[in-house]
Image 1 (spheres, helix red, strand yellow):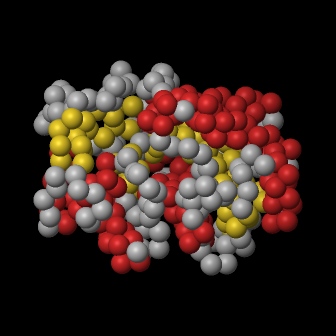
Image 2: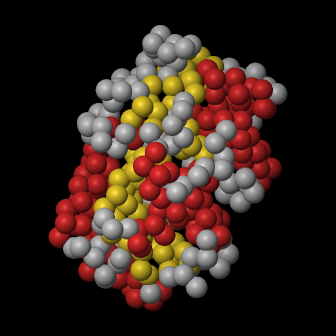
Length: 331
């Protein structure tokens, strides 16, 4: 049996998928979540759930000791870009401050591996459409800054504690749901494009907005690199295993597919798969939205050997639609 892995935010969207992937890989996940946005139902039966804040050092040390935790996957945090602008102190507390305390507790407990959920928002508005990990990090909102600050804390911690191995994974646009229907995105007032479009298709919203139609792209709308949440979860598990034998103690890797789709292409796919027209209202550009944002995931693929299994827009959208219909039936 492989060692126990603490999954902070394991009752949330991405964290719950990571738990499923860990179980499938023979690991022993232990979820720590304060349930402020996560839900108990997202934690599989038999998986220990510790209801506590990810920065609660007393709870962390007790959990590390009780379950003999040897590694951490850190997903807990706040993720709404717009909210980070209106309430930046919340993001510097929930993301940067809490992460700092978690990292300190992990170092004190002798945790060997730490995988951090970061974001492409650390790049800000990239100078090139396809972004490598060596691109300048210039966040344009407190959300991106709060994640980049945590990245810096991790890098400094690795330099001071050589036995502490860290992987920083920068996500691009995460979407979809578990193909088996076990979990998906549950949050209220979602802002992610595919989630919102599927809510419109499922009758949960009357309409949605397209922010900007005059970009220098094929159809005038923004282009993004969408990655299926289950592929992202598998990337975390692959990186966790890879870290054990990695020569370098620190790795920064992009998580995406290396190709993008426009907003209009996504909406067209949702309409085709749902069989329903979507009411989409054209709106002005949002400040700071780059016209095109596509990852270069070659480092993750070549060094770790990660191979996506759901690299298809139809697959991503269909899984998201199935999840919305399942939520409707459960309501």
